[in-house]
Structure formats: C-alpha cells, structure tokens
Length: 309
Image (cartoon, rainbow, N blue to C red):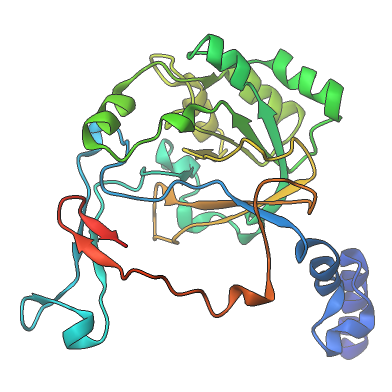
C-alpha cells in the first residue's frame, strides 16, 4: 500500500511539473527539453558590476581592501612561480557592496537573512521598466504607479512572481576611481522608486522583488521605500547595470549570492537570459569550456589594489 501511495504522489508531482512519469528513471525530464529548445540559444546579459575595492559605497561602511593571500607559515604571498597558484584575501567592510541582493533582515531582524532566501528565487520572469528619459530630465525622478500602468498598457499585466528591474541608466556613472566613487556614493541626486509604486507592485501585482541601479531605493530622508520593503518581508536588488538592450518582456533573470550565515546583504550576480533575437548579450556555446587563455597574464597592481592583465 505504501509503495502504491508513493507512486501515486510521484505521478501527481510529475504531472504538475509537466514531466512525463517515465522521466524519473533517466532523470532527464522536460527541463532538459526547455534548455535545448529555449535556453541553449538564448542571449545572456550580465547585469552585474565587477567588484573592486574602490567602487562606490556608503561612507558609513568604510573601505574594503584586496590583498594577495599569504602563507601563514612563511608570511609570504603565494605565487605562481613558487607555489603553482595564487589566491586573494578580501577584507570587505560590508555585505552592502556593489551589485547586491538585500534580504529583509537588513532592516528587520525578525525577517529572512541571506542564508534563509529559498532557492526558488534563483530563476524568474524578468520585467524591465525604462524611465531613463525621465531621469535624464530629472536625476531625482521617482518611478510612479502611472509609469507602471503605462508599461502594462503597452506590454500587458506584470506577471505575479516576476522580478521587475527599473532602468534609469544611473549605472553609467559607476566608477572605480576612488575620489569619484566617494562623490558618487554621497550624491543624493539619484532616481528612486516611490513607496506607493512599491506597494502597488507587491500588493497588487505580487512581484517577487524589484531591482534598481542606484545603491538606495529612494532619496527620502528616512528611505521610506526600503524601510517598507524590509519590514514587510520583501527583498530587493541594488546596483544593477547593463539594463539597456534588455527587452521589456520575454527574458528570465538568474542570480545567486554567497550563502553567509545570518548575512544581511549579498554580493549578487544577476544574468538576464533573453530571446536569441536580442541584439545584446552572448549565446551559450560548445566552446565555453575550456575557457580561453589570454595574451597577457594576471598580475597584482599595487596602485589599484587588485589583479589586472
């Protein structure tokens, strides 16, 4: 009886996923077909800034430092010549750094931390709402409910469970120059997502989370939008880039981050997976492995504080 029950449960589960019951024996199932028929030919667009110690960050967190990793027995840095490998030591002043994923515990201790975010967040439908023209006229522009409804009038209702990225082109100001990075992080002239817009997206459209290019949700004195999100159990993406060229609909977004125990921020990498006809991005290829070698070797730049070619 127990065996018949287990088989019945398996049949219901595979039917719900659209996977043939016979697929369980091989482990293939229809998701391999999804990859072969859709994702294998897709264009992949990286929405992530490269992490450097000099990139913009709130001054209250202090500086981060990259160093060559040192052998504790000798006090000397590992080198390709002497040890056959090299590694890096990172002193990170904060987990609110670069392109990131903000869990609600960042503001609310009763809410989920980074290690408590479920794996089901990792691949979702992607919506891109473009307000770059409005921001060009007003750097402190707030995304409004009217903007969202205008987007829906053109593209259809925002799908429940999707990720909404707000394109403002603020990321074009991103810099690794230490002086300019400090000035940019302190500049209050950046685009925002209005509180009522966040409420509309979450409570009326039931999105999973939204993302924006600046390092804060809004320019209000209390960061009211970010406060509302975190205290109501919602996460967000911050510091995203390369949204220009990502279609408004039809893409997926994949992302991941280190699973720090009790972490209050995530160094995230977001990848837009878009239709093959998308002009921007790179396709998957059989030549992706092995990875290509380069004409110049990586070496430590003492001025920049990280490796370059």
